[in-house]
Image (tube, rainbow, N blue to C red):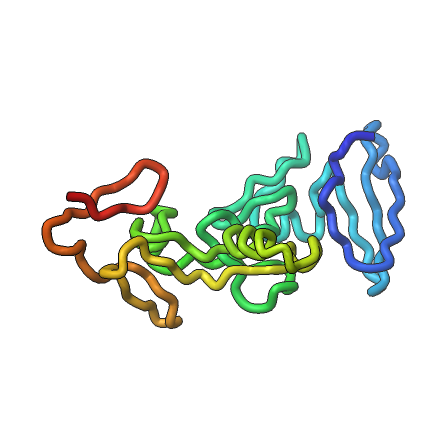
Length: 186
C-alpha cells in the first residue's frame, strides 16, 4: 500500500477500513470517528468535502490542486503569505492574505517587509526551543508585517502593520530585491 491516504485527519478515535468499494482494483478508505461520522476517501480525495473545500480533487490520481492561499495534501494548510484567520482548529481552515498584499500579486507587506504568516510563526516558535512539536504545529501567524525600514509603516482596518506608507530616508531610493522585500539603497 502506498501513501495515497497520507495526511488525512478524520478526528479522534478513528476506525479505518481499507476496501475496494467500487471493485476497480484500487483501495478506498472508509473511516468512522468518535463523533459518529463516516468519511469516505477515494484515492486520497475525501468525497463529502473534496480537498477541504479549498481546492479541486483530481479523481484520477487523488491529488488536490489548492486555491490561492492554501496548500497541503488536503488544502488545509495556509500557504506562504497567508495566515489562519479566526479559530485555529476550525474546519475548514480559513487562510487570509497577509497585510499589505495587493490583490492578485501574492506579495505581502507591499514588498517592503516580511509577513508574520503561519510558516514564520511556526519557525519562530520552533527556534525558541521552548515549545513541543505539537504546540509548534498549532502556532499561527497574525498576518502583520515587520517593515524593512523604520520609515515604512501603515496599518490596515484590522490594525495590522502593512508597510504601505512612508518613503526611504533622504539620499536613498527604494529598489526591489530578488526574492525578498525592497530595500532603501544609495
